[in-house]
Length: 267
Image 1 (spheres, rainbow, N blue to C red):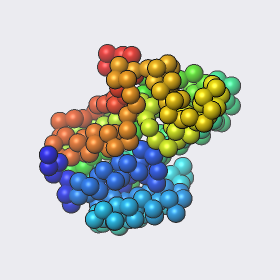
Image 2: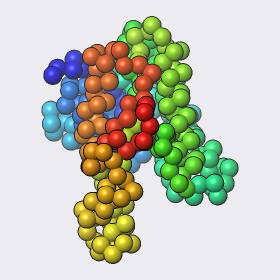
Image 3: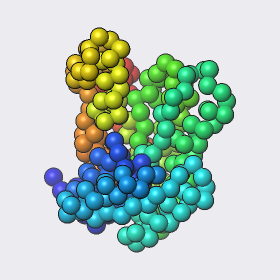
Image 4: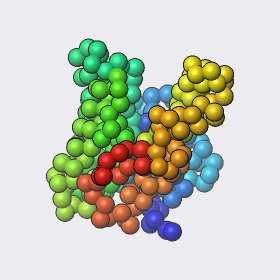
């Protein structure tokens, strides 16, 4: 299927690894010129090089989105790279190491700034030009932790709920501008970070260093879902590419879960 994305330009925040990297690579395969964002120059350049090696176009914008001036600089660098940004993917964020309600209030503010206000900064910087062009996409990468909060992660889960709520508000604010705003919410996903977690689980549950066995035990236990498997990063990238495309014009103000049915709610 031709998603009609060739020639579009995207900024994918937090795209030097994990789900963000898969999104950047997936959009590039569809002909999108991608600005890779991160804070580690080496990893960001590695993602950009992978895109280029596959025949795509990529540039890099480095910076901490938790600071107004730095976020504005990232937006300016991204817009200059290919003459504008048509697709903003707010993927960067922090899950951190909080311990739920025992986390100090300052930690809650830090999570909110990293996971919500960072997106707001880029939305404010990049949607005016989308509005002028009469076309654009803003996509937040949320989490199954929004409708299905995790224990000992109250602050993180609350920020993901706020991000999904922000999506709906913004879709109404940008009504009839040609810009759609959506959230894509992955459940547990087979990233390198998850494999590290599985290895820790294995060592703590008598499975030695068998991360695959630990992953199976998690799917059969606390991470059980009707699909009997975990999502792959490229599957999330494929869903996002559809939402970002002209074919996704009627998907707006939505929270699209991609979690194998892990979230036990009707919607």
